[in-house]
Amino acid sequence: MTLVFILASGNTHRDYTFETMPKDYAALVLIGGYGWQTPEDDKILPIVKDAIKKETIIGAICNASSWMAQKG
Image 1 (tube, rainbow, N blue to C red):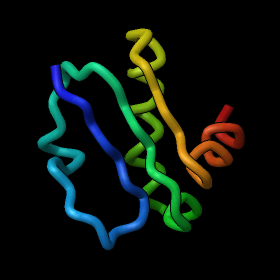
Image 2: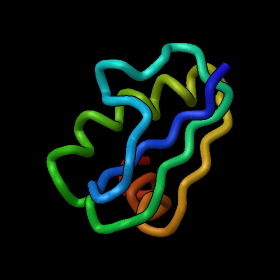
Image 3: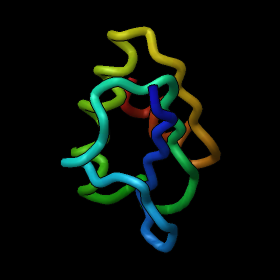
């Protein structure tokens, strides 16, 4: 299993794109930043919902935790 980091803002090196992200991962970490108020979050919400359904560990840092609270 892989640890997957999702970044809504974009000045960081990413290991995966939304299209190449593995289906089987041990945890999902949502990194903080101001990108959580952009159209990109439409791509992230299904990933988070799937992780919740699979009972995968999810970590949300800073603005990512606010985003999760807003999305329910």
